Image (cartoon, rainbow, N blue to C red; front, side):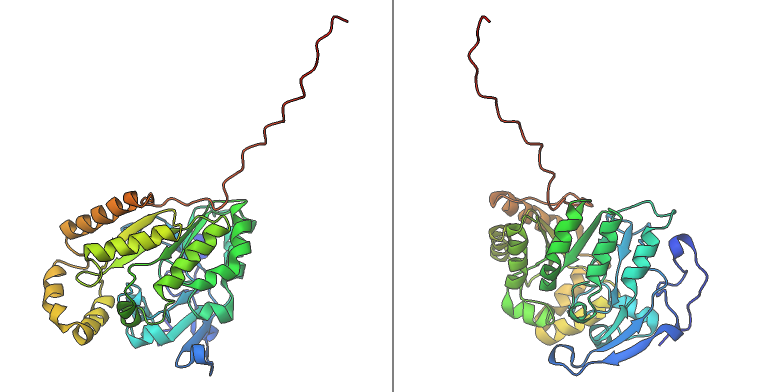
Length: 348
């Protein structure tokens, strides 16, 4: 593995030029013989930086991210982050699903970076590369420290997840929302159980993710849903879209934002191999649809977006404004003083 191409020379906000941000002498490899981790190898590293600046050319509506893990046991066949495993000479297919890099010192490094005089308190997005509430988080428990560090500095942040483990940190999220803006979104692209079992085999079922939305709402925490991905010819039928949006609304989501499947290099090869195995009749249609690059044609994306937004309005929810963080617990208005008891006027 390419651990030896890293440098100790810091640059802006402590970030080093290489994306990995750790060195060969900081890697410890572990395996755990328990059912939930069987077949998974963890590479524990001590990161030099955890605040990652998003490239200016990115389509993302945020500038900074924190990713305590690399690789993801959710094993989503379409995951765009698969290519990043290649930077370490790790396999972008099964290796991405089973070789998990864990930045074991992420909370301490983040606390130090947030306290730097150079840090401006910008919004920090989490779960944008791989899921910070994947199974590994149940063992390593990095997110409580990360959330606490952001709370201590009243730094706005957002979390996108498919993991039900986020409910473990419910109290921490409520506390954070008392001092800063916090946005929570859950990813649910479709309800089809058969499709879920093959395309997102390591994730909680879509219904369990909607239970997370419901539970957060019951505790006063607004939660949006990223309806992603909408998979062409497999989850995009109008009745499928209606059923998914209806379930999202029934769970109490504050918003729904659709995102059509995109196939970047690394993910594209893995997804197309999956497609050839499970839905071979669709291979030629996908080759034509994605002949122009990583994204589905604009007309198709607009059609799906329009359909989902129309359904969202019908069910009483709407899209999220790009980049907006939702305050979990809105500031309460100042209490209005009770009116004084009327008094009898006198002449004396």
